Image (cartoon, rainbow, N blue to C red; front, side, top):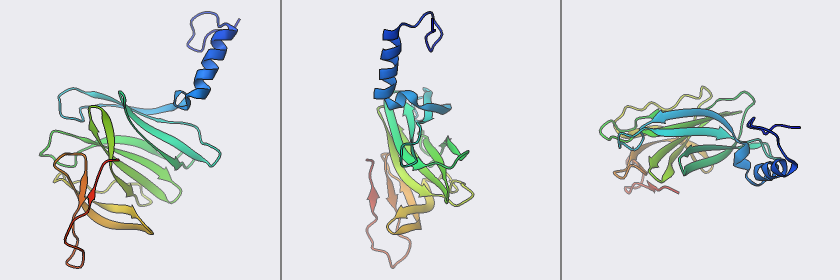
Length: 190
């Protein structure tokens, strides 16, 4: 007689079928947890449990990567390099604020992509997708509310300066020179 996957007594055919159906109907159930952090992100003096997981590659070779805090989730898919780096860490964009942000780093064949994420009690918001260099280092964060980084734009990437918005859930691009239009573009949460 087989035992249940969680190791508690005999497994009947009905339980095995139900477990297999749940796994097939909910691909996130097959996700492999890579990392767990415990950090106060929203400044309420309560530590959030943050989980980073990845699911198997699909036919196109892309893997689903997800970050979860309770019911709040952010997911993205990437071509992941075998033994490539996938990690998250807490960062500080503005030391004057009590909130902290997350940086999700995914190594790809031509470098890394970093997703800067903000958290509110019910959702995770992508602030910026950043194109990393081949060394996969995050852009320097001085803690003054500004991030200078290469940002994906058509037809490629370019350096730009972005300031954290007063809501903590958006980044505003700062004008770089007199040649750029006067009005800054606002990036909003999806």
